[in-house]
Image (tube, rainbow, N blue to C red; front, side, top):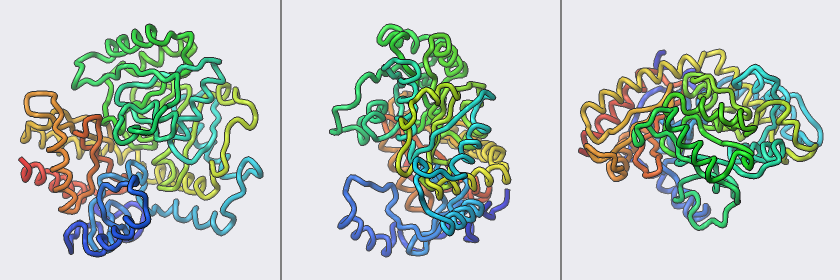
Length: 447
């Protein structure tokens, strides 16, 4: 792939620093943010963006930064992909909203049809559309509870599923997501995740450990669903050992438990397949999607076996804005971009490049304990050399250096010691190489 953006405005695909980061224009706007926006709404990098596309973000001061975050895996097709922009403009000209629960429209049905085609498995599927990933997860649990007549929900260590009351209960990390916000929804239980760096277990052994905990602490007869991210997101881009997910899915099927794959961060080409579950041939009963589904507009879905989806009474699923016609138009445009530009293949190419750069970096810096991920969803975990003790301070220092030198990086993980790399799939190779040059410089400068 060349340096030119795949889809999006004709912005120069370059890193360009004309002021310190943040510059005076952003600092002025940060004062306005402080005056008018609740302090609880934080920002990772306090620059105010005025244009974006391909692999760059341009701020109000004229700085052009390389984007390795994609708005946390949202703008996979770029920030202004042509098919997304074209569809949105056409839909705005036609009408902005009716509420699908009042008077339906084709876009909603078209998105559901696309989800039935793209999600794992060739069984009959149906979908319901919502606004956010947390809404999708909540509704997937509702469907599983109605379908099974059971209450209990099992999630996993290090999981992140959202910020609503139920999804906070399902999320593992206390700060900043849960602290002070309880009490949380009940009947949520946590099982151990396969974490190869830290447990050294095979996938089958890790699954047996998790199933033993579930059997003893919950009981299959009480369990409505297992909810799991095939690759964990906020928890640290943890890729379970091979065999872990298939073993869990097989146990769930044998025990009448609904297996829900939370593909909100890992779906839509991000991992080098349409969905991360595809890598091991796992076919979930229900799949939750959001983030990369619509090029930045608020859209989410629950897609699953038709008999499960139809178990809920009429009126039991929905919401005023769920499947808004503009968001649906954007979603269809994003899928068009993914197909036209083979973004599944592009994610694999990006993954190969990132793996090479990160493996080389690991040989030079023994603070990097692990390189992991799939496709354009890669991470490195930083630990004190020779141990698995997390090193969040070094992580923060490296990230700060990247920000100051024009590269947008994101950290994550239970201990805040993981870099996650989520470049837009529209980024060019040369720009990506330059970004990792800066990452390498950041490690050298903070050693």
